[in-house]
Image 1 (cartoon, rainbow, N blue to C red):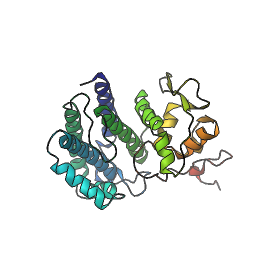
Image 2 (tube, rainbow, N blue to C red):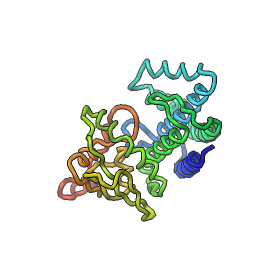
Image 3 (tube, rainbow, N blue to C red):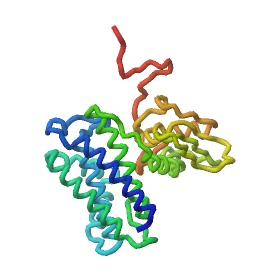
Image 4 (spheres, rainbow, N blue to C red):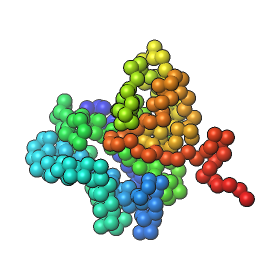
Length: 280
């Protein structure tokens, strides 16, 4: 196992433990609390995380040996390419209690970590999109765990996870710049854009060439929340220097699939917090 994979798995374990702490003591009504993600409650969110873990294990097994289960999963995706992920999460959530979801997620997390450690160096893993390295799969799982963890935290009224682990989310968001433009029917900028961000610890996180003509500066947390579409562009402190940089921030997405609807702005242009409503 590479040092890179080892580090990502350690951060994934820590991020998963944080999300698990949010749901461990919920009663059944708490599991059914709506999250900011339209149509999803806490149960559906955890069901999605465990389903993706299990699907990742199936992909690893298919890459390394028997493809039977993976081929069946791909056929499900072909039958309903825009809805099969949501359908899986909703079905699992409806047929499991909260305690059963937690137990199944705990098992799926452990199974995924163990399976990733069995992948030979240099082996790429099958997935619904392009094949990916084990460390990339683990990073994608961390990105989703963090993003959906924000949804759960909002649902239960808990603080967000704000740690330097978000550097993994930022990295995916940076690498998927051209993908975000393509998903919105736009031509990707020919020139590079440089990120100059600050991690929660205060450490700098810089991605992109020194001589890039356009930059995005600000909080790494804001950028991570933006590329996972957990915050509206107007509610971040990110500063875009250049037209392509600003356009990118308006459409950024770190996740696969169609462009999402994002979150509505909580502040109008005057700075008024619209989520508070008008005072009488």
